[in-house]
Amino acid sequence: MTKYIIRGGQPLYGEVEISGAKNAAVAIIPATLLVDGVCRIENVPQISDVTLILTILKDLGAEIRTVNRTTLDIDCSKVRKQHVAYDLARQIRASYYLVGSLLGRFGEAEVPLPGGCDLGTRPIDQHQKGFAAMGADVQVQNGYIMAKAKSGDLKGAHVYFDVVSVGATMNVMLTASLAKGMTVIENAAKEPHIVDLANFLNSMGANIMGAGTDVIKIRGVERLSGGSYSIIPDQIEAGTYMAAVSAAGGEIRVKNIIPKHLDCITAKLEEMGVEIIEDGDSLIVRRFGSLMKANVKTSPYPGFPTDMQPQIAAVLCLAKGTSILTEGVWDNRYRYADEFRRMGANILVDGKLAVIEGVERLTGAPVSACDLRAGAGMIIAGLAADGITEIDQVYHIERGYEEIVSKLIQLGANIHVETMPEDDWHVSAG
Ligand code: EPU
Image (cartoon, rainbow, N blue to C red):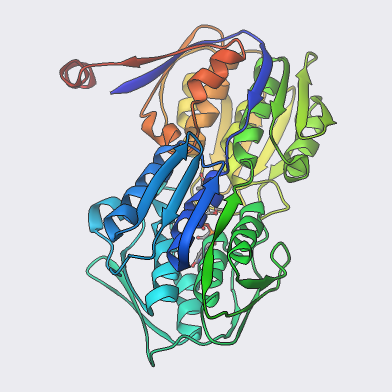
């Protein structure tokens, strides 16, 4: 059992380099299944979700060569299997991209229903609707999504999504890239990682137009061939460090980012009294005065990202006045509220709303990282709190943040990792 131990109450100073985007990487890596040849992928984040998806790809028969710390060569030419093993794929949400990729490549896919963070119900009906519109028979059987082209080929189709879905938009883009004819996706998601996947596929020879708008058009091509591609920087990782310095105080430079992707987060932090200066591919983030309350509503891009909701909540816990947080994407993303309360936060949750009454100070406490972004929120609260915060279940955090402890140490945080032998843990957990 591994814990992060934080002695909080110290401002952050220095520079932090942002890694490649998790939610782009976990789609682009399965997308290499569609490519006939070697894909060189740069700026790959070293996080456990990426390790898992690479393991699944290897199990399918992909050849993967590490070029350097952040660059991989992936060759899926010899993959012959369409069946994904249960245990690995169950652990990760992004395994659903294997359905779109394998269906596009072989006209057939058998992939376990995905896992991932518990954020309430996570249906995949829009993915299924997209595959069916392109001519696939899609069924869920024995915990697997079974999809098969009904008449050999998949055909371009008009797909109108009932909800804006990142995963369904990406999955239809994947399958449609090699389908016959034109696919039109309406009410498409517009997140930066949607554009990144389209850019990756186009750089391998696909014909995708309109990614980043509500309507994406994909003209199917005969084949995709190898090439090089560099993954965009992680918007949420950058936002997390911006929130960390906003809560703890100090001044940091967040490097290797696309500032435009951070606009929704920058605007909210500025409203709270944080100073943010754009400087090329960096943002300088400063907070010395007091924080002011703000109301935040999460929504699909370019709205405030749901994946930054627990992190901004940690900052609001220390802001003067009463803030209202509205979760506009997931049913249940406030499981962290009980843990924040252990640290002295005044937070009341009712359905999709949370009312946060700012407090003068938080105090360190033992807490559990109940999911990836909740864990990031707890780190932020711990950095700002007086005393010691112990966070367990940090494997959730390591799914999506590369080297978070060393990056924070570089910013002057007092944080370290403690690993307890399994037996001691059972005794104390009892
Ligand atoms: N939805 C449906 N039907 C579907 C698909 C989605 O009703 O077929 C609903 C969901 O229940 C939700 C909304 O649509 O209410 C949006 O879900 P979406 O499909 O966009 O989410 P996702 O693809 O499962 C990705 C990220 C999440 C992030 C969301 C929203 C990956 C692997 N995951 O999930 O990231 O919260 O988009 O931006 O890309 C995280 O990184 O911490 C994380 C949870």
